[in-house]
Length: 79
Image (cartoon, rainbow, N blue to C red; front, side, top):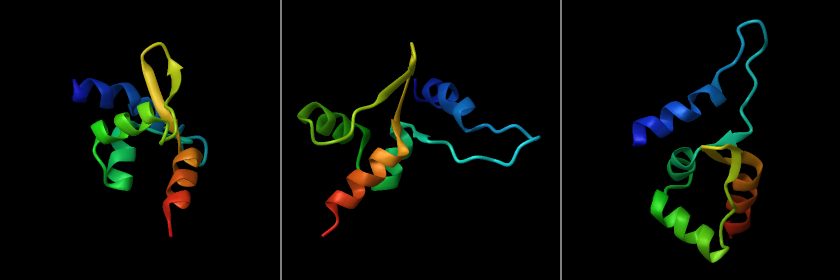
């Protein structure tokens, strides 16, 4: 299942060779988990509590976080 999820989001990070690579504005839940150091289940629990940014639906089966919203959440947690 994890492999399928990774494959589904792989095309979000691909860039055309004719253009300068652009940074993707989205992060998968796995990327967010690695970035902030908390588990996927904890992220989902925080979302349910309203304590974490919601995932955005990109297509019928694809969900991702807006990178800017995650950065704002990280900044709000700094002392």
